Length: 185
View (cartoon, rainbow, N blue to C red):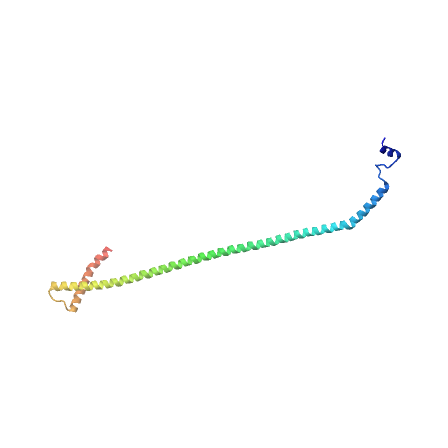
């Protein structure tokens, strides 16, 4: 037999039942440790937990506040963008209208200039026509007088006589050419 069985047989300490003085010392030590942990450590953990919770809640509040501010800024940006777009559209419309007005003014000026040039040309044509007709009349009159002088055999040098003869000849010429000119038109 060995020694362990002998101690059990002699009534020594039983491993299933703890030793009473050790149990009492262990309970007292546990109570002291529990007191110090409950008195000093737990409040410190609670304080740290509270501070951390407040920081997290404050961070969340600040984040929500920042998000709300960002949303307000976004709304302001969208409003300004919409205003800028409407302003740009208004400026484009104004520019189109102004461009159209300029085109109309230029067209009116061009038409007025064209009318002025045509009227001036017609006036010049009328003046040239009158001048040519006067020159032709004078030339035709001289030739008629020369021809009449040769045919009649008398001198038509007298200015009054010559003018009367030329005018009569031209009137007869116009009278004969007027009906044929009006029917051909």
